[in-house]
Length: 218
Image (cartoon, rainbow, N blue to C red):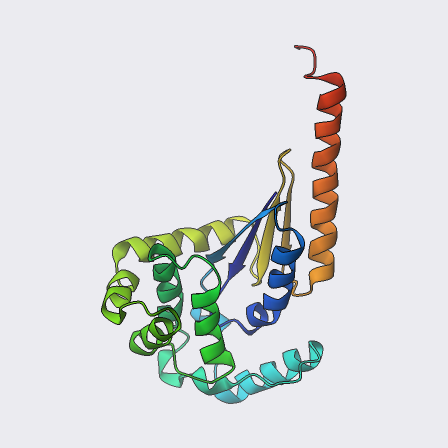
């Protein structure tokens, strides 16, 4: 079983999905592999003002019954929705040995919890280097490389190839070729129910193979 989490570092809904992601990894350890991929948001997907961002945060915070309120301090009007830097830094961290969640969570929390302006490459690198003890120079060089930019472009294109637009998105694939695409969900229950069903189907195929072997040739 393979579970792929498509996310954008500054997405508040991806932030709200993190507890579900952590629970899935705990619950299905040894039964599934887990990976995350960047799916860049388009400039017009971002709030157009800090006031609008605050309104969205109040709405999502209430929907999630959150004991804390997200911080819009990361928003910069002058960027006009261009916030690739933290996503490039997260992908660079993967190349430098941090393919787990630590580096990207540090970036996300710095923005939506602490309000740090990680839309700039210098600030994003500063946050990531502090969280990982990676060399800031080395990290920035990787984040600004053509190879990292191409991987982020490719993973974003793969996200869109599933004909979805909402982040977070989860692509679930089992060993018998079944695939489930769940977009916009942030709670663990529907994700876990789908994984359980897909694991059960794969197990039934394995049991059938043990009892009956391969099908007769056509």
